[in-house]
Length: 395
Image (cartoon, rainbow, N blue to C red; front, side, top):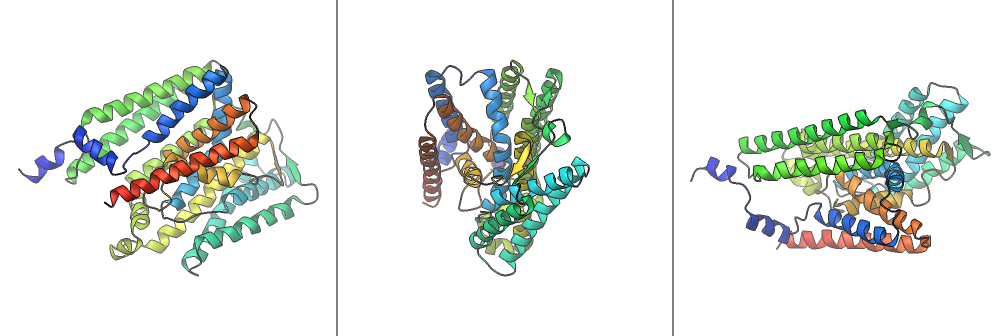
């Protein structure tokens, strides 16, 4: 049997089961968890799956999910970014100061805030790669330093209110017309299908194993059904929020980057085995620096989205449990803490789990202490699954 014939043979059900047995669980545990969460909370409170509540839920997850998406960039390398929450608050303050106190064009203020986030990430990346400081120490120092700078910039007032009718506040108070929402999901499904088809053809050309073609059709159809259901449900309330569109676009763009560009392949290679990647000619230092730049830039964007929803920046911006929830979302979604394994959509799945748990318990008037304990248990379970998966893949 020649190589081409072997390459084009799709995975059999038995082979798929074998992959699952060795820890290649994919997103199935998270999807199953979301279904269980929906069933449990809906049975306890019939308002949980109502259009109004689901719309509020997806709006709540945009800021944290964006920060989590940036943290995934660093986790893929087996590193950590503890400064993401502080950076999000600091950059939101920079935007607010420029737009409100200095009278800058709001869009220009947003661009400068994102640039500030990128500079912070560049500093972290250089300290990690050039000075050989552990990422934990670098970003822990950043967590405290950038939080202090936030307090200094806000001054004695401690808060900057954003105009409710301004560009920034409108980001969280804009809803897509029904026709535009359908156009958006059609385009998203088309991009997803085309991406899968291109990936399949490239794997065949490179003489790599491919899954059965029907599996791609099932995934595309499944995505179409989920998105259509989401549009129908949210259209029964106020419609599809712009915040969800922004977050969803970021997830799609970064998923394509990670899966279909040289940079993405280098990220997985460095996270899997940095020394092997270096010997293969990959600039490990450059990849690591870029990962920290992306992490801080996305943290800045998440801070801007959070400020938009609150219509203000204050001393608590980026604080409280922002960082912890962002990291937890990435890990619960399926990104490995050990590097080399993770997808952009894990931020979406993970933050959905966290927000659904928090939202459901809020509807049931459960104390916040219980919510934190449950979220911690879910996080521990996700890490345990990841650890068992790694152990199984090495046996």
